[in-house]
Length: 403
Length: 166
Image 1 (spheres, rainbow over the protein chains, first blue to last red):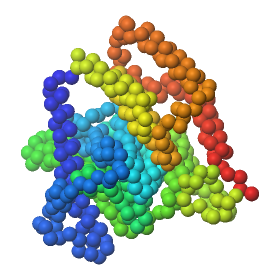
Image 2 (cartoon, chains in turn red, brown):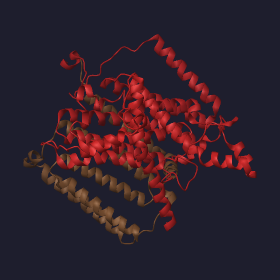
Image 3 (tube, rainbow over the protein chains, first blue to last red):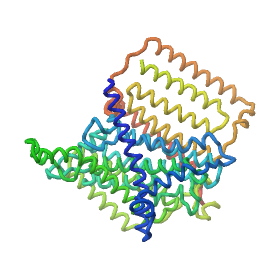
Image 4 (spheres, rainbow over the protein chains, first blue to last red):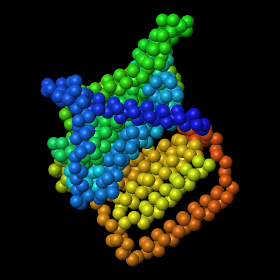
């Protein structure tokens, strides 16, 4: 590793962290304004144009707030928890490429890119869990327990959804996954890109990943860990001042990182929907088309990436404004009885495509859907209650408890 | 040079955290130190260019198993281990025996391995492709058997947890 390599690595890290931290106020502003718009309110609009400076004012306010430590808290772990929630969020995006220039992005183009992301996002559970436990408050503890159970349940589904991208590209490397999507659409339409979401397995995998994304980041309708109507504010009830701000930042940066993964794996990463290669070919001779080619080649990919990122974030807000919060047992049922079986079948059919090609795979999809419709339209499964020995299961019917 | 310094820093953190797991009085801190230990081990795997194993170490051990451990500790709200320590029966000498036996075996292995410093393995040896090919061609039957074993464990735990409803 030479000194120049080291310097470029620093530049890459600075760009990534700079982007994540500087886009944060915009994201928070967007969340508040868009929610207000969905709910037919005005939202924060006093400070600066359209209220854009409101997050700054909030940050300053949080800086000067008094920090209150609960008397019975485990002080060391209590102070550690916000850092443990912020750190994985900040480093998780390190393998996501946001442009074609390999000197500037991604921070580390490693062979295990997607696994690295899964590893870092699985560490994010600790911040929440420890915050809930160390606060020594029953609401916080319940929030922490709910969150860890949720994150563990949805990690499996997320892994299965991401495995479709890995299997389709033949690599865990994020840049290879994007390059796979730069092929002509379905191998036949030359001017469109083959985003994974346009294939049957990509569509199902992407939909599963989107659900898991909401659950992993504790967003509505999976926001049970901080359900304010039941748990005050869940695991962050006892936190004030900058420690609260650290949780807040960690949450939003984690959302941006996971949206980046969705963009990279299913929505073509930094690729435009239309292939720019004809313009690139025109630009070989220089002149006007040369300038256009340089612009589309260097400037457009990051803009496409950021556009997709914000589109996904907006869909998060839309869902938050539309859907009701799930009950705990519904959440677990969706995770274990819907996402994982569907993900497994999808993965199996994708292997059929990889080995035998298009026709058997599509026949397989048709067969699975037909069998499903046949079985479940004839005989609706009766509701069964699996009674568990442990008393930690809420929302259990009374009669099952007495047996 | 820098790599060796990094290795020693990681090794010291790993050993100190492993000691802390045993000597800490607070079960939550013990579990957290074990997480730190697993994480440092993953970093050491990365240094040995075993990236795939390092990533799996974080996902499986640090990310999933230890979260479950902490979950159970917090749910049961375990106190200090004094209650267990006061029990005077066969468990304690047996624990010492097994513990020191494992320690002796490991230390013996470590000295045999350490004395001739092995050269850095090639950087391709730890990639997902190489490991996947080895696991699913050469070691396919052991992998399948392990899958069966894990399934047996899952089914057994469901059987144990399921209450008989009359």
